[in-house]
Image (cartoon, rainbow, N blue to C red; front, side, top):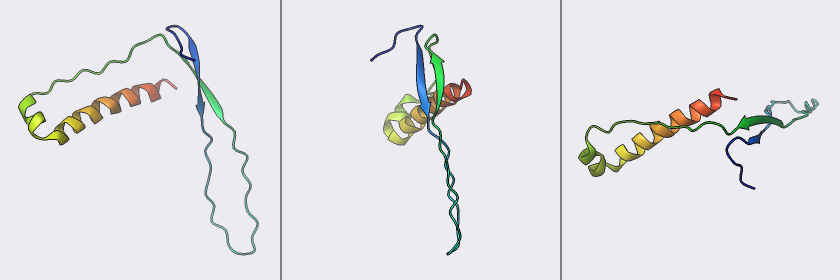
Length: 84
């Protein structure tokens, strides 16, 4: 099901699990993981603008394209994480 502007969507957050070191003959530590939920209201648009000073270099070195795309994507992800 697709959501529309203004809708509230539920985003499941997986539980944190720990890896424990145990010695032979010792008991294990049981964990009771619980899924949490974040409610996000779809009422904003996310935009990240940046300038590429030398477009010809970007085409000559494809890794530059990847770098610019990764930087833009990282800022979008950080902005989303900050709202949780």
